[in-house]
Image (cartoon, rainbow, N blue to C red; front, top):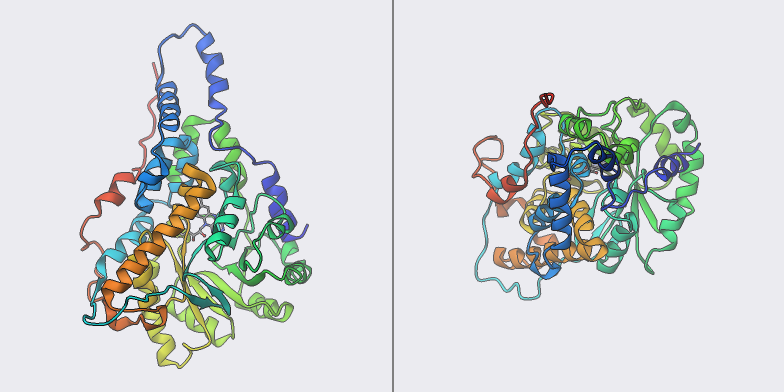
Length: 438
Ligand SMILES: Cc1cc2nc3c(=O)[nH]c(=O)nc-3n(C[C@H](O)[C@H](O)[C@H](O)COP(=O)(O)O)c2cc1C
């Protein structure tokens, strides 16, 4: 089965919309067993239904953190657990975000920035902003519109949606719904040798889709990270939520170990620009540039793979420096994702050399809370934040942003940052093992 078909087939079984929760059915059986008291799970479900009925209006959402706070209350607990989890002790998950708070700005004064624009070009594609909706599985569990909502909002706002390999419907259908002129990139990972053997055919298929301009290939999936919080939450609720997520979240999937040699073979198979997704070491960034690849996405998969992998923003800073030293920073683009929640985070990444900045969970949460409209509003919030901050920084265009505009003296000193109360307020701690009831 070709990679794309495999992705589509896996997902065909998962179409559970946000607000359906088969726990209810199970609990009706339980309540029939003469137990009139509302148990904890029933109480949580009742509160969730109340939250859905009384959801804040979209006009009262001011930041991406607001979407997260709404999503946490309206999503079934198991779906929230799957989205929000990191691996092991979630150190990388939290550091991804906190690393940004160790970078400060050095604004310039008395500069006319009244015509500030976010227009940019990424891998040859002209766009209205330098951030994009990154690839993630599981959108159908957020909202029935699934990835269509991400595609449409990205099209309306002229930004990239990195199409996930685990798309929940055929990629042909996805492309048929694109806005005129809308361009996208495609994320691909390999499960097994057979899929790799079929890759030449698969790339031909991608090349036949003129709106797909680049392919991001995962290099961070030799095994699935230990998403312990997610496992604990879903083991406890053991519900339809678990069934709905089985496709993405089961730990016994065998992944295929890609090597530099495979990458050489891939470069012979396609003319599409190839970007490595999940690079975590400046020396690998350099190797990718030397190998003639188009770019590297520095990412620890949103803290879901190797815990204690360094925060991407820190690796970005050292990688750009190394590429410059070797004279390889011109035809090689750097990307970053993980923990980005504000326009100012995006600006910091651009100052340190990124050409594209990805966000995952914030778009899942905006989709879960308000569908396509929510995703569009999230994009608009980021654009507004960026324009305001760039003006305050004294710049009018993306190309003016550079490393002299940020102070990164403290970047390496993990644990020294100011606490971010908005972030902490939504953070879900690891649950304890449940004691059996008497
Ligand atoms: C629920 C969820 C599912 C994801 N699924 C995939 C996937 O299928 N393929 C992939 O390359 N990355 C996947 N990612 C990782 C994202 O592409 C991205 O690296 C990460 O979300 C960035 O961190 P952020 O969520 O803090 O923005 C997933 C992330 C989340 C949260």
